[in-house]
Image 1 (spheres, one colour):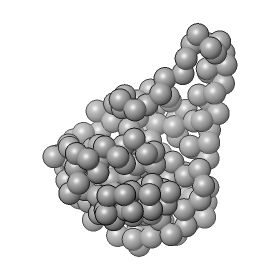
Image 2 (image 1 turned 90 degrees about the horizontal axis):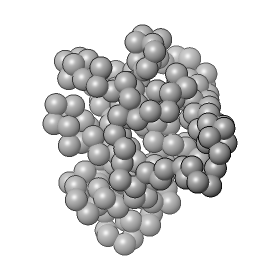
Image 3 (image 1 turned 90 degrees about the vertical axis):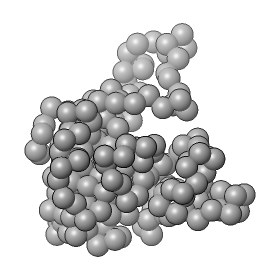
Image 4 (image 1 turned 180 degrees about the horizontal axis):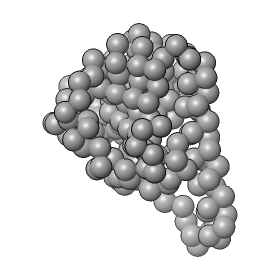
Length: 183
């Protein structure tokens, strides 16, 4: 099974045609990408609570196809009666990209292509700034501290993906992101 996992890196616009015109058995998007009709997504992933709440309130038809952390899945299934998905091998600290990849593996992926997961290229810039995303307060932190914090987060995100990749050498992996169109 060939699975496409779409990130939110700044390189996303350069892959629009690739996303739209390539055949995949399953397509997993990020947060609110289900509004991109051309992507023809099967699932979306959201690791944080604000996008999960937004999906429940504004795109309820996507709830049963939303991959999230167990905490948000359980809390919101009780509060709003919706069912959401969580990878069986979820670990505390999994981010949206790792949720996508782990769920793809759970579904039986034999090939996984990631697009615009620019953390693999140590790129912080995003295609879409979500309204719930917190910015780092430059009045509190000095520029070099902001850079250090961003680099630490990028390394964490990238390391999570690379670790899964090492654990599953049987999967054909392809990464298309900022600075490298076919890793």
